[in-house]
Length: 97
Ligand SMILES: [Zn+2]
Image (cartoon, rainbow, N blue to C red; front, top):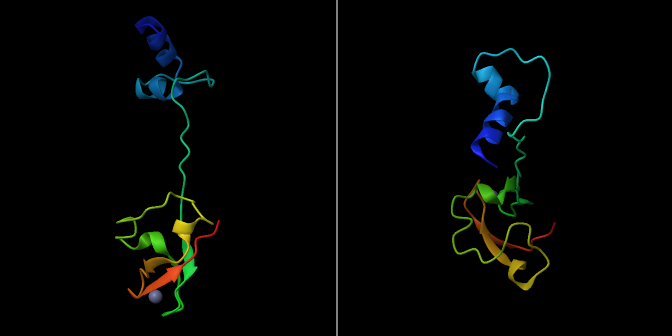
């Protein structure tokens, strides 16, 4: 894509036209894309304080972690020692999806 094509694409971009103070009458093809963000939690009930907690809220959760996001049912996701972000107690969990 050469500079002229990029500039022409920018001129039809609603965000660019708005930034330049141009009134946008209709949506046209735009080189900007709409973003979608993943949101991940690892929810459990702490056996010590009985709180429903997201284990990812514990600040050291990913330290020394040897598994991937959403991994479950594997040897390395069974009996994983975790820390409750509410009361700080350690306990073991099996990851499920
Ligand atoms: Zn707890």
